[in-house]
Image (cartoon, rainbow, N blue to C red):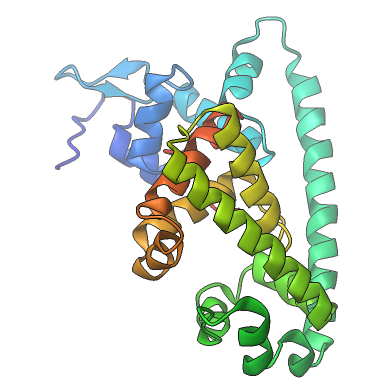
Length: 269
């Protein structure tokens, strides 16, 4: 699609606005649809465009979203006529300072992880199969490291793995087996995504993932997409019940939405 902008209209079309602020066109359309950021100008041909004020609002939305605010709350903050701009800036600064502190702690954790013996981070292939069962593929660990080895979550996983004993892993594996059995039973019983029972299973699944790294609702949505879309993950889950991978994705999505996270725009991190 060609992004035409006649000279002198004083605004950016959605494509150029998305490129400027570093989000997708789909995200801007979503924000427009929910009234969070609507393009206020128009081209000579009648197309809606983003003014400088609209772009500034997008940047404020991005700051609040980075700080973990739900989109609905961001909208209320930005549209509050009694809002104190200086107070919001002070609050943003405090949140950013706290985040910097957490990131520094993560860097320290990565440093400790790098100093750990690599042999201490892994069970042997034989131990993995013994603990996790015959369906377990030891190569999955190496594949996961190739895919996510540079991420903060992998560093968190590696540090936790280095401190765990074979008995710890046995307990984690037993909990995972029980969860998978319960997920399969719920799917066969016709439990509906978004129901109280389904949401409880979603949170239980997220807690299981958090044994490896701190799994936020947004991260959980991304994992749900992977479970359904990746043939390896889908085959793994579908062994417990036909169609379980897609059902689990829908359960995760519904739970995230119930907690203020939009599955359509959820991102890793």
